[in-house]
Each structure stands twice: as C-alpha cells, then as structure tokens.
Length: 435
Image (cartoon, rainbow, N blue to C red; front, side):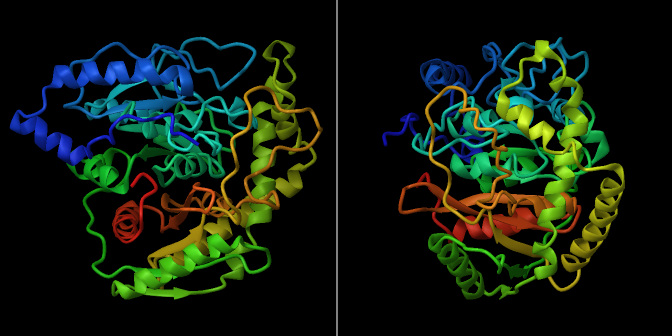
C-alpha cells in the first residue's frame, strides 16, 4: 500500500543541529516547510486532537514534542480519547511535561489516544505503513513522530501502550523507570504498572536528545554504559511464535554474538509465568480507575471500552493484595537478574505479526473483551510493567507483509543509559523499516 507520508526522510536531530549551527539551515524556512507538511498530511492521519500550536520561533533550535491526551498540559483540555465529550482544561502540566518544558522543549500540541487508553478503536492512521494498525494506546504519539510532525512525543505505558504504536509505525519508544514525580498529572490506567516515556524516530535521535539536553530530569544521564553489554535473549516456550518472529530473534542473537557481546539464549520460565498475574492486575486497576466514568451516561463510552473496564470487576480485594505482593517479588527478581548475570533482556514485542489496519468506525459489539496485545490475550509486553522496569522498543526489519517487526529490551530500574547503548547497537546491526 502507498505510504501516506511521502515527504523526504527527516534529518537526524544531530544533523539538523549541525546545519543550524553552521547557518546552512534557515529556522524560519524550516518552520514554514514543517507547517505546510502538517497541514497537508494531518487530515489524512489525524494525529492531533486539536489544531497544532501556532508557529514557535524556538523551533527547530529547541526540540519539539507532542503529548498524549491522557497527560495534562496546562491550558489545554485532557480528553482521554473520550468519544462522547471532553473534560475541562488542565490547570497544571504533568510532571514529565513540566520537566521537559523546563529544559526548553516546545510542546506543539496534544495527540490522540484510544478511549481511556483501553478502547480498541484507533483514532489515527499509520503514516508510513497504512496497511498496518497504528496500535494504541499512545497512538497519536507514534503517528506524530513517524509523520515528521515533531521531534519526540510523550506518552504513557501500562501494558505496552508506547511500544506497540512505536514499532508498528516504524519508530522507537522508551518507557522510563516509573517515578511518582513524572506520573503526577498523568491519568494512569493502572497506577502500579504505569510509567511515562518518549517516542522518537530512532534510537540515535533519542540518544542525541539524552546527551544534548541532559535528560537527568527524567532519568539518569550521567552514567556510562558498560563497554561490553551482557544480553540474554528469551522467547516464551509454551506457545506458538510466528516463524518470522523466531527468525528475527535468532538473527538478533547471532548479530550480538558476532559483534563481540556476551549474548545467550535462556528459557526464563520464571519470567514468562508472570504475564497472567500482570494481566489480572492491569484489569483490576483499570476497573478501579474508570468504573465511575463507565457509570456516567454522559460519558457515552464505547462498548469496547466498557468491556475492558468491566473485565476487572470480578477481581476481589484479597486477590488484588496477592497480585500486588507478587508484583513486588517479580520486581525484585527481575531487577536482580538484570543487575547480576545480565544487563539487558531481549524479547519479541509479541508472538505474531502486527495487526492489519481496520476501516474507521466503531467496532462491532460482539461482547468480546479488547485484547491485551498477544494472540492469547496475554501480551509479552506486560512483564516490564509488572516488574516496573524501563524498556526500549525498536523496529529492526520488515515482515513478508511489509509490516515492521521489532524487539523490546528490558533493563534494571534506572538503567536507561544501558538501554540506549544496547538499542544503538541493535539499530546499527539491524535494518530500519524506513530505509
């Protein structure tokens, strides 16, 4: 299928900065081209929930970013993707938005999300792979970055919400180590599993932002990564993996080994067995978060969103306490695994190929629950959320259907610098879908 985004591939942020500093890139001309690009493409992909911010002469000298519409930005409404109306205007910006604004970043608008970050209707179109679903729930974040509307986007992730859209749209996502100060002003689906994060076009762009703009405000940026990263690669052993996914993991393992890094394959059943409890915890906390909204007729939630909210109603308080205790144990075990024998856990994003795009409009009311991401309804992405880990997701190749296939990299809490180094290595070894 023809790409909706036909413009030239955006400059890397490092290259753009070099051109600006040398005087070979005129900032005003850049802004005019960007405004024309957004005006021409936005009607086809619907990344923004409202008109983009007016021209800001700090761009492109300062990084531009969009914000998922479940995250507060002072002076703008936070819509939560609701199809039946919008709440009032946010008085204060979320912690992560305030932190980036304090660093001089320029927010250029709010972007789409699935309803309550739970619904199945995708509010935007995939600009680079229109035959592929843009996924969710940080849909507009990935779409706005992939379309070249901004340098980065701020989203949230309680079960894979940053990672699926990023990889499906051919870009990169970093879910940060959860921090209460950054989550202030974020309308979390599952507070104990939620974190904020960034989407950029490439790991190289993310790394440049990290170093050039000193992102110690969102994670440690002053610690060097180890010279030789210790990787462990794992697949869930008890279920069917699409052959193209298995082949990608095998190639990744071989490439890491050939590059001189310690890389080994391990079953890690104690890791994979946490997905079921993670799905239960997500369901219960999503119900607690949105039950009141689901009971408000004026909210007019879609049937798919209501089903997702209702899913956790039967998980009682005793079971919830057990799940939280198990989460604490899982977090301790994974942190020990990734600060002892290994630095990075490499796993596929999911067991199958990316979902195809579906026609616009509400989903049929079948009474079925919205999927949690995996073919069996229990996603591979949930492990990082359950263990409260940072995770980087990036596309590495294209499937036989020309849909992006990627991996996710998990590291110990606070080890975002290790993820950036590991992601840069894989980005260099792999073939980006945009190429």
